Amino acid sequence: MKIIRDTQRNCARMAAEEYRKLLGENPHCVLGLATGSTPEMLYEELVALCKAGKLSFKDVTTYNLDEYVGLDGSHPQSYRYFMDSHLFNLVDIDKTRTHVPCGVGVTDEMAAHYDDEIKQAGGVDLQLLGIGPNGHIGFNEPGTPWDAVTHIVPLTDATRQANKRFFNSIDEVPEKAVSMGIKTVMQSRRIILMAFGKNKAQAVKGMIEGRIDNSVPASILQLHPDCTVYIDDDAASML
Image (cartoon, rainbow, N blue to C red; front, side, top):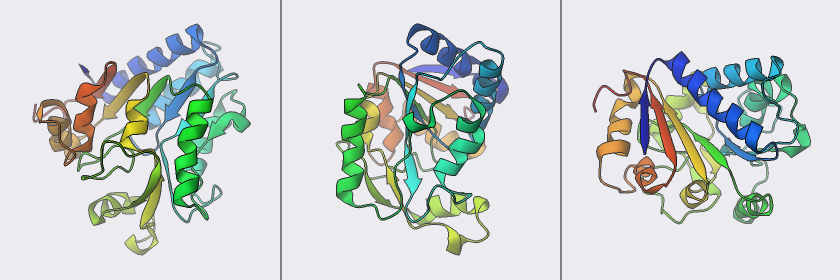
């Protein structure tokens, strides 16, 4: 696990450079993408690089980590809407090659089929992750088995509270989500994880210095052969 500590903006720029190199070497690569406030600066940097003609998404295929159950892609808090607004509508990507788990009418069988789609695409070349204050990656909450594939997840109260700032009230925050499983994430060839802010410091410490235990799902990343962690001083404050 490689740790890079810098400002949030510099982390975003360095991560964007990794994408520029990958897309230059492999224009047909498969990207695993994430949502939330953490990757917003990275997406800004990628949009700027694309508009400057320094990278192209036209042959890229993407698979997002997760989606809320019950929200369709037109809902402003759905992750499909987020990706369209922050990246897909702003770059030269073929929208038919972008994939976000379906959150409407989803079944366990439909969720598991997402892994089959990723395999058929050749697997994820570079997976982007954030980390929750409780150490979750995707929506894989503490206690999720290491061998979990894409599945429907009941969200903990802590996770719903952390996400309520995006909704009018806690009552509007969905109680379930569809998420890539930990096994799915670990099958990615490369991983970038970004974590900013003091509220992530405990989770970052557990991920990097703690024992590998599913009470901190991100700790499994210690075993990944090619994982880079970008953190700011606040997120690194307990290391």
